[in-house]
Length: 439
Ligand code: ASP
Image (tube, rainbow, N blue to C red; front, side, top):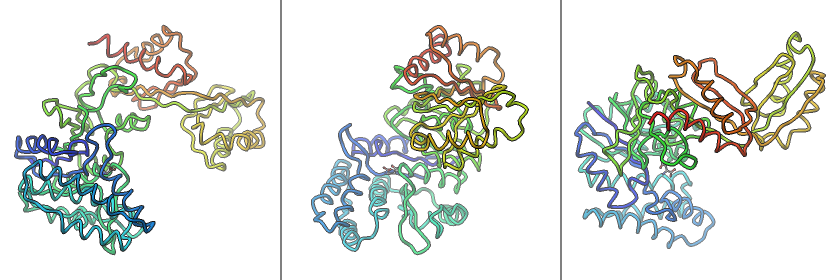
């Protein structure tokens, strides 16, 4: 068994957190390849080292004195090194960083140092080899991640290693300059390393005990999802549920490697297992609920619309011409509704209305704003009768007016449109009917 373990910023924010991480790694000798983030927040008002680095580099770029900002960053690392009782010195590294900032090495280089330095500390603390991600993670000339070259090189480099620390978040361009993934990108590095070594599992350690059935800002202590498929995760993530960087899914998904989300502060919790497919039924019929506010609907009515070939295409063409992507398009016999993000739509609303008139000559167009969409997601819905019925009776019970219903053809999700003002109540009602009653 070979495992890749990735630790997020809050898991590595202080010496105390590092010690928890050390215990987790030592508790299982198959945890051989470690991908650290940069130190995150120690308390809620604290600043992440990555943000400190971006700020410090901005000063350097503006030709302002950045000595104090860099010293503050160094202090974060010194605190960890001393707290762990290590004899490691980062003086040389900080000298190089200072020089590189003076010669304007780029904000990606600057940000990447957060992971680079934390990786060095982690390697010294664990007695593992340190491998600079710039030597094993590659981007193409056009800035895209070069998955095949990376996989070849990384697989070779790691082949005969007992263990190693590979910092997350960055790699290198063909000319050797450092480039980072987007924010939160250490998740991607972990996934890439897991694929390269054919890991049995990619453990992603963070500060929550997995994916939650619903947003904890709406539901008090929601249940944790034990097992979720990649497709369900995509549906929930799209609707705003986030724990993992979206691009972290692709490398491991291709290789059929499961991801296990775990909590550094509660290592005894099993967390959430993300898999390609599973026979395990979800605990509560539904796997999760997620949603977002801020949509509006454009309703188009025309008598005999059903027999007019090309009607839908012409309506959508207007959106395309105005550069607006649409989210859903439920339709009736003589009506068609297009749901879009309100903030994207507002500026173009009159052009769109005029365009639809020109292209389709409808009887009526009316807009409805301030809508929320809620996705009820679950592989279990396909084989369970009455799921939709339960959802709608729960909503009716709370006197919530359902403005739209859309069931994906995969029967993996039901999307419900309600007023923004009913959003929280609706999520509570759905959660209660499936989860609270089952506990
Ligand atoms: N340190 C980077 C960030 O804050 C990358 C990561 O933590 O995954 O976005």
